[in-house]
Structure formats: C-alpha cells, structure tokens
Image 1: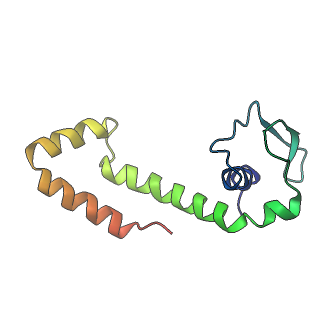
Image 2: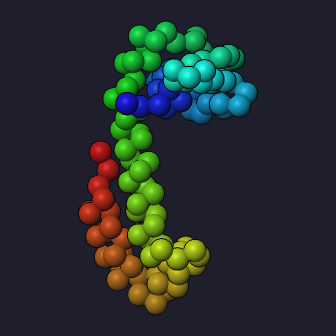
Image 3: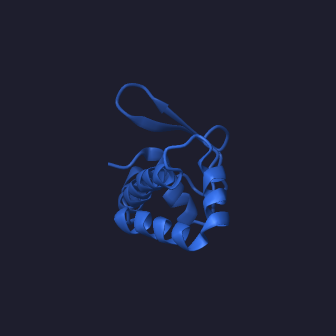
Length: 112
C-alpha cells in the first residue's frame, strides 16, 4: 500500500503541481492509525480519501521504482562511498566497459 505522501504527490502532479512541500504546503500527522492530512495550503483543492485512492497504483509504482533506484545506485557505485568518482575514472579509462556494466545493472533491475 502506497504512503499517503506519495498518493498526495501523484494527485498534485496530475493537477499541475510538480512538487509538494510536506513541511509547509501539506502537513501530515499520524495519531496511531496511519497518516492523515493535518493542513493543506496547496493552490489546488484538497482531495477526498476517494480521490486519493485512485492514485494508489501510480504511487505504488513510484515507490517500487524508488527502491529499484536505490539498488541501482549501490550497484553503480560498486558499494564505494565515493562511487561517482570511481565511475568517472571508469568512464575515463574505458567508457564502453562502463556502458556495458551500467546496462547490465539496468537490465537486471528494471523499473515497473
């Protein structure tokens, strides 16, 4: 089940708002039974629970792809702290081998 924040982000994007500031525009609160909207100051109408439910699938896809991105990032960086620096060195020495390695990572960890 997708998080409320991701369903709100999907709703906002579908209604012309690219990013949601969850510290200023939309405040969420969890009083023990899951997140709920505490306040809403976005320029679009506050969605109903039924409207947010329609964004479950797109929010789930976003969350699954975010997990895949984390896996890919770790594999791209070969587990190194300064992975991007190692990648630049790899590209400098053999860009074709780097391309093949990155492609194999993407193929093995495809997005939804």
